[in-house]
Image (spheres, rainbow, N blue to C red):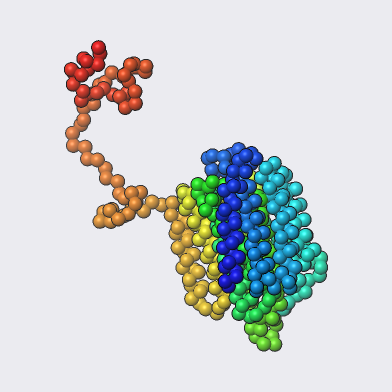
Length: 435
């Protein structure tokens, strides 16, 4: 655990320290596109934050390669090299898009090529745990197609949700935290070395997001751009592929001699992690709703609009920061709820806790729909927007003095003095001012 934490901290430190110089470079390079109709920020903000995140990824892998225990991951598996190859390719495509705005179909092709590069180096799905059947071995073509589909879906889900300051990096950090705990449990508790690469990927991904978040929280000083959102989406997908399709459920030995029982025990996490991942269920839901919405309107699925979940939260009445925290809440609830259910799926308390927290989340989500008013005795303890407004009591009609409007351009008239006559100024001072 110490080596994983050391890798996480170094990745976060490198990402944090490089983001400032990268911001200056983005300004000089002109990677500050004009504000579009779907954007919520008001000032042009530099992109290319993915450059700092990519070098943080490289630093994390380099440090892990020189640590005593994590070095075995590089010696026994080719998955870290496969991840670095695919990440470098998708990062390069993202940098070009942040600068030159390349076509969406070209980006989609680049995502598929990056996934194919990882498959060629061994990072692919070999079999699937199916309830009631057991482990189903996949052919080479089946595994390749499923791996490419998972990578493309995850990358675009993260890319679609990157619409508010700190939203994508925070949600992916939450997902990576839950994924790290799950992968570390399989690696450490059951002694399965095949789960070590996924654990390493999750630790590095958390470091990338934590190092970038201080620069990206509202109001953001820099955006990660497609170079960052596609990169963290690919790293997240690589971890899911590694632990979902590379580990035999029977190796967990939850029930000796019964592979089907082992599959049943691990289904609460294995199947949801596959398609789509529960840890990014909120971005995946946003992705699916966007595709359906645009197709229904006769538009291209890649056409940009203001119908994403974070846009709707702003339309309801939430502030920028509150909308981000609501998305954080739902992501954490789904990710850590799935994690708790995988540890003890027979506990009713876990289900009741998830239902209770979901009810709280719905209340917070619909809070702007109504404005509750506190009783009179609690007026001093609530924010001003929840206090009852007292109507002024008018006892006698007030005579309004007729004032002569002041013409614009009269000497001595500016600011507040242009609103009316100075009734409190003595006549003597008026006479002196006319000299």
